[in-house]
Length: 222
Length: 222
DNA sequence: CTATTATTCAAGTAATCTATTGAATAATAA
DNA sequence: TTATTATTCAATAGATTACTTGAATAATAG
Image 1 (cartoon, rainbow over the protein chains, first blue to last red):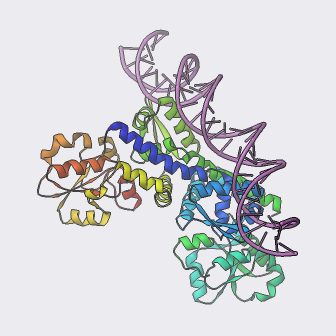
Image 2 (cartoon, rainbow over the protein chains, first blue to last red):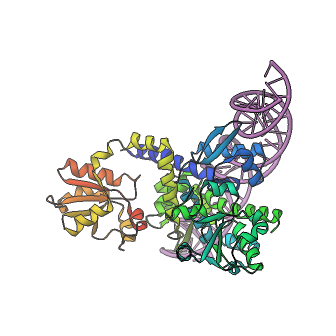
Image 3 (tube, helix red, strand yellow):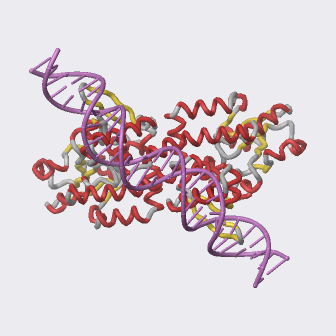
């Protein structure tokens, strides 16, 4: 291969990879991907969840779609977006990891808004599995119900954060409670654990969110 | 946490992750990262390697540096850039993987420029390790010598592609030859294998390049 | 101290990206 | 058919990005 062919090859190749990076290069699109990692959503639901106008959310979703990071299906009058496949989440995970380890600002933002996270007594996947095996743990999925329906940890009960306070009598006081949500930057589990501990429960936060759990290779029920 | 605080938190957080994605969102910067995954390089060397003007390469490198994806050191009159740490390459790998699996254009570009790659008889890491253990394989690192010096596979000999033809008498004809280079889109090993097979050698291409080999957890010598 | 070399900076222009607005489209319900 | 709802399209303005050029800086050699 001649030198100018090599250059043309590299130019065309890296151009393609940059297409995907460009689709990721916007904070709103990253947030959309994080929500879609939970379950498919309509444009309107995504706009609501991320605080974007519908037209703007639609345009961002089309950018993600052009990069083949998401797919769509129409159901009646609504259009539902979803992650294109299981390769997309690990890419967001890798980006997240580099941000966490390289950008002091990430640590600073988390500390500013989520101070005292140590009080939540986070546990890992192994500790959870052991507790479940010993039947000492009640596992709560505190995400919205539709996300639970789309896939949840084995033995998890759906108790969306919004309903938790009203449904406290369902939750046994003699067991350890473990709550999980969307991922490390989701505050649903934080707030659930804080509420439970304030009411005298022995509560913990599960470190991985549902997509992280799935990416670890652990089973997910539907 | 109140709703407007949650929004401020998410806005600030995703803004940070998008900083990194923006640094990746340019084909030249991706190529620079791929070269830097081999070993540190001066600005001039990087500009030469990627076909950029020095001023332009310098500016791209500063973008990567602002995102903490690369670091620098000064040595005399030159400034050497390197990947910030071992977390950066897996991010590029994840991006590469999504591109390979989601973009038909990537497959098309590779097929256009690297037709008949099957004739190169690629082998994987396990097959190589077995061949080396049985002393049936001669392993060639056909990258430029400085990249070999910065780190290479155990038992590999440095025979830069440029020198291969002139140094054929060093290479025993009764062994299997395996050549590796920078990665799946580097053509050094392709051309080395083609040359060797044309001269009657029993030659193969190693699938992973050096950084991929390292990321697989296999040992690298310096 | 001066000249040289490698790199960065600053300014300018063209191209691309983002959010907003209001109109257009597509499926469904009345 | 007409009205309604969800989504997309098209046009626009402002912000950001990319590359070029020529000047400025920083380390070193003479």
